[in-house]
Length: 293
Image (cartoon, rainbow, N blue to C red):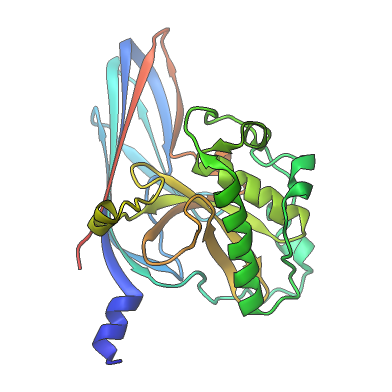
């Protein structure tokens, strides 16, 4: 295999446009918002260009949160009846499930990754986790760990249906188990619960997934490609964080673009905020991911 062909297999350049629009039934004011919609540089991807715009026009600030996610924040003081947030970026991705960057830390795993081992708002303690077949241990070598991680994701894919009508954004994994299905957020939360029960540090990843044009012809569309997507990263002593997508029964590869990580969805919510006004609101989200190389 020549070097040029190998480079094409291992890397891709992706263009992302993520638009979120909130329409209100009447004027609102004193609105404050936080946005986690911007890809970040990681061992698995590099950001070539990134820009966030907001309408009505306002001053936009930026900071990094505890997990290293980019957080944009802004105030709109004047009365307004809509807000539109558009994130556009160009990201270079790699065909690996982990970055192979193991942190050198003398502390025990229980201290290094305490937040990814303990129960959280989106991943509460549940008896249902114990009923899911899982053989993963931190003592496994890299090959065994990847194989068992894939087996666990395949269990969720094969035994739970993808169903956007039975859960909502604030649903507990309990609803996912009770209904036998849910969306990518639910599958990620449930799989994280199983991993944490087994003593495997596990974190929630938010971002985008590229669905190729060929997928339509083959009838193999990737679930979650039309909006923000969620998957799981599990920690291994020599590989560090390994990406797995139970919603699509697949290890992460060049098709995945990360925007944020956290304990669960509530740490990585793409848009959240408050405003003054007694109105109804309508949310419209559009995500387009294309390959440009």
